[in-house]
Image (cartoon, rainbow over all chains, first blue to last red; front, side):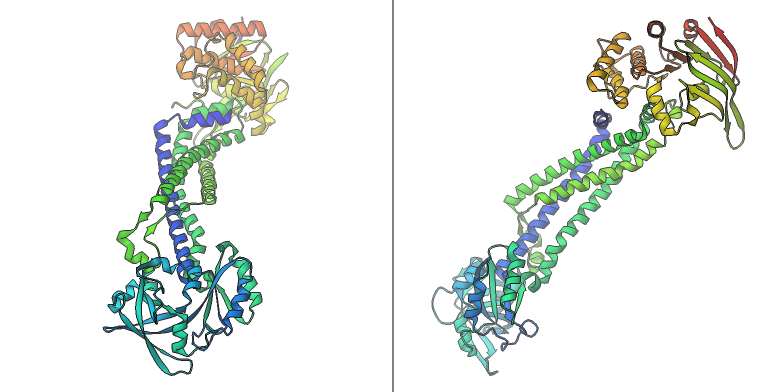
Length: 406
Length: 227
């Protein structure tokens, strides 16, 4: 019956309870919605990082990442690839030749990372070909095609079929270069990537560099899913102990940081909201207790012990918090469902977000586990909020309390 | 059989400036089935004495035995449990739980005692019928008149099967008809079921009904009249 009393007590002062319920509901709804928004943004960033930029795992010569010199190649790339493809969870691989060098157009030049790829293999690993906004993805079969980002095309003032010159050193250290024709222009959500990365065919660049066609600087590995990352990483490392095997988390620590700090960041965010609500709940419950001094005094006089009094106030507070919390979480979920399909266009801030590699159309996403964690936090908030008003109630002297004129 | 035995009961309130002797050595015995009124002017010590009898306050000196238990030695949590099982309270301002119906108010105290649901439901219905509210069991206090609320309070006081009922100015907020009605009900319960009632009152109508009238003044019993 204490449960019934506690529940009915909440509705004794409907306006007061509704005010705090609306506050809890809106506070949590905005918190939950923001969590969904942030998770959607982070997931999209990770997705882009894996599918467009780094793939799941990369393999290099032991020295290459510390000193990305052309001489640090993976020799006999075909054998290495064979070993990698035998590992469980590996979906596809692609080998790349990488050079950091200069690209020139008739009007200007820019420093770029030139990646020589096998287009068919690359399609299995990255989705760059889906990001083309003009031209084709190495389909014309002509000599020396190049695919560049829109940002770089604008910078170099080039368009499809324009010629650009890449200057580089061959394996002997001699200066050399080649002219490439723009075959495709891509645009991703990462403007830095669009400005700094260009793609050519493996065969073309290895010929210019006089490189062994069976060697490369990088082998990118795409897995069936991200959950297999650690196991696949360990297995490949054990099989290729002479090479440097790194996951996308190690290659792109900035993205990994966003991923790993997501949970903590969000919990702090929700924690701040709940802290603000905590004082509102304490205030409401304190008013409820002081208003019922006489009644509480009577209950203690007729034999309601301290544990029951405490439990009654506690239940009242937790139920108040839970009702508001449930409404807030539900509202937040509905918002997340809607914007998970519709997406939120960050058009106004697109430049800033794109420079950090984030998509500007964010599809919100929220997991059940986060909702469960928020629910637990709401209950804990309710329990904490109950302590002070309950202690106040316990200090009442029944003989005095029953005689107070309210 | 003695329900209450009070020996040399003293209560001194020490404030920073003055020392108030609220009770000055009261000796009293109340037997099972009494219908007793405690009267006296304001400041005579009625309320203090009633608080002592109800285990709501502890004496400075002296002894209070209820049903053979010296309650002045009980801890505060033991006292709460003692009150729950041995004393029925009726307050001046009814003090029902406003969010519970009449029957739930009566049931509530039995639930705290651990009585099973069917048993307490049956007893609550019987008690409410006894006080003439058999047709209002599902009404909340706000839907009942003052007299009806006080009758629910009497039913609640009796629900725990107490050794005695302590009623602190139970008619103070009632009109004459409701007072008459309430007193008749309590008198009948006293007569038929031998329930002990102790009132503190200013109301002459209560005094007239009482079979024993104890008058307090300056914290002492100045008269104890059996009718």
